[in-house]
Image: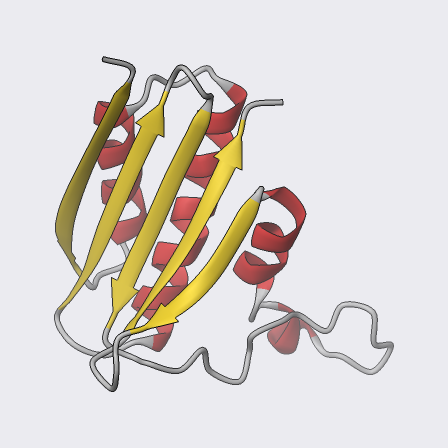
Length: 135
């Protein structure tokens, strides 16, 4: 079978991004471009959840279809809204460095992911998901 997947509940802590990459590493082998890019995106989305959500934990789901060369990642947090820093403002001349630190993960999703989106779960929270395809 060429497809593998897994889920994990991680403490909402700064180390959660590294923990999420370890989960992905058990599902998909490093060294494939799509896996390496998915690890970067997963880190960014988890970091956003740690920074902007509430509650003690976040949930991640990852899948790898080796035959198709597709990695899917999703992160659930308890904040049903995306927050005000949904995009960086790097094109604006008056933007200070603090503002540039918000929204970069979503800019990366736009630039790298083959597809991505947000699915809210009523007022319980949201899933931010993405797919990365082999070149």
